[in-house]
Amino acid sequence: MSINATLIGQMITFALLVWFTMKYIWPPLFDSLEERKKKIADGLAAAEKGQKEISLAEKKAKGVLKEAKEQSAEIVNLAQKRANEIIEESKDIAKKEGDRLIVSAKAQIEQEVQQTKESLRHEVAALALSAAEQILNAEIDQARHQDIISKVSNQL
Amino acid sequence: MATEAHAAEGATGYIIHHLTPLGVGHGFWALHLDTLFFSAVLGGLFIWFFKRAADKATSGIPGMAQNFVEMLIEFVDNQVKDSFHGKSKLIAPLALTIFCWVFLWNFMDLFPVDILPLVGSLMGLEYLRVVPSTDLNATFAMSISVFCLIIFYSIKVKGPWGFAKELLFQPFGPWLLPFNLLLKLVEEIAKPISLALRLFGNLYAGELIFILIALLPCYIQPVLSFPWAIFHILIITLQAFIFMVLTIVYLSMAHEDH
Image 1 (cartoon, chains in turn brown, yellow):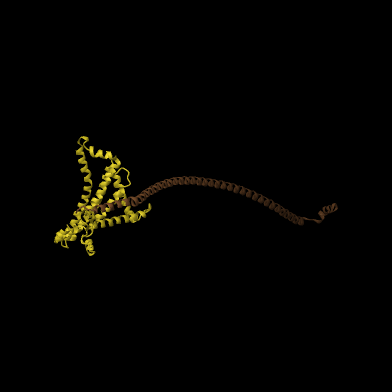
Image 2 (cartoon, chains in turn brown, orange):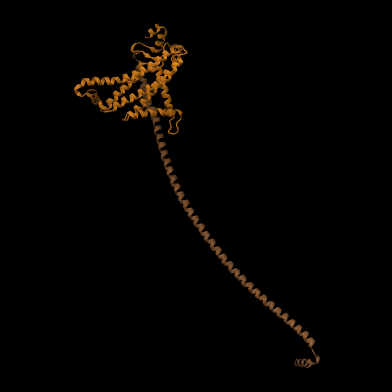
């Protein structure tokens, strides 16, 4: 239990250990800790920044989307309008065409009526002539009409 | 003492045998080889483990060893920051060394009391006391080193005259100078003595109880030594922690100017 030279030996060992720790152990470990702290802080800051950027981008995307929607709605409106116009136009054209067809048909009908009338008139004339011929054949008297015939023949 | 141990038989002999250091030489120049050997080996273990972690230290993802070492570094650094407000490159590494070294000393206490002495006796060593902190020389070596640092920093920070003034004129002013000096000297000298004796006493008593348990019949031993060992895990850590914290506190007091 006595104090002896072991004390001195232990003090020397202790001094060496402390010196070694101070020189070679503490600084690199402590530095790496500090560096990691900094890295983590930087990482967190970057993450926060990224999040902010994402929210900004989201806002921007929303704006773009809204604009696109508006634009497309406008385009649809225009197209509808144009379609209506086309329908109206084609209606007009159809009506005109119809009118034209009616007119031409009417003209044709008229023409045909005229033709029929003409042919009828010819037929009637022929009938009348044949009827008159028959009547004349039945009624004719050579003697009585001799002078007329001769007059005509004279006139020739 | 060694001769007494030879003479004594039975339980007393067993106890004395376990608490006798392996010494060479006589008088003051005797050396406790076991204390020197085990503390050097444990110090080497500490240095080797930490140096390896320090060499591989990265600020990226730490490995297992680095994680553990960093935990200790952070722990010690927090203790230092809590009580020491100056700037010093020495104090934190000093505290780390004290904590780890004292812890490893104390940890030797958890080895079964007969194993290492048995190995020693096979190698022809008559006595082997494996726990360096049960040797007053080891604890006093550390506390006296700390005491020297206290004196050194007191003089360095306050100047020789400032330190002398503190010794002579506080706490009662210049008219009670001798009384002040006496009080201050006692206060200062009490620091290393209490540091060393506290650690020594706790570990010596702990080791003694392990030895006493080892004397009991073998079927009772586990029942007693297991809880005592568990409890001892707390004690060895606590004693290492107390030594470290008090060192930090004393050194920060040395740095403070009144």
